[in-house]
Image (cartoon, rainbow, N blue to C red; front, top):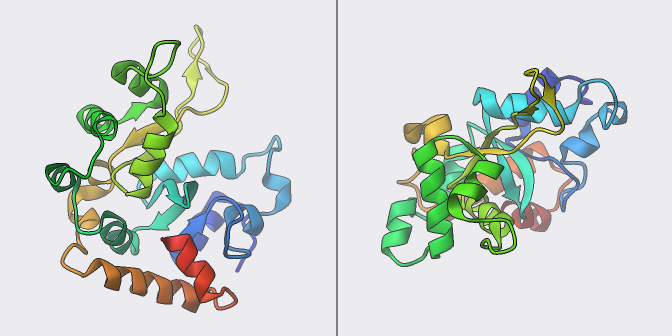
Length: 222
């Protein structure tokens, strides 16, 4: 696998492997952290921290906390199977109808869907999170919604000062995959048995990363 030194390199690797965590994980070597030239991490030159936001917003893959509650990318080729397996045959409404969604999850998801794209501070404020008397557990809920593929990260916009200049770190902006990547694409594997989607993903990842153990690949994708 090529060493990642540019945004294009990163996009190429995502398309090739299909599933690419941002950080080290159970599958040795399969992460942006391990594949990227170390000189591009936390330096003055643009690197993965900037690239991930640009890649997320352009809609060429899905980005979010997908891999054991940690961030990473899923290519559009594999996104439908990933969604089908993680949702286990339920879109969000049907999961609610079956009583499988907790009220806080429903509240946050509905606000993301309503606003189409919303940053963490705005989402917290509108749903009553933060502060001494606010609701707790925001990060846990949003991570769960991402692991279930109902919510993804759209971009990382920067705060603006009074002169209109960007400053600080990018702020996480959420959306739904149906809105950002398309409803048709996102739900295109719904007719397949979720277990078959999982096996398809496992076999693909083993074929492109043969040094990985099947146990570790299954652990990563679950």
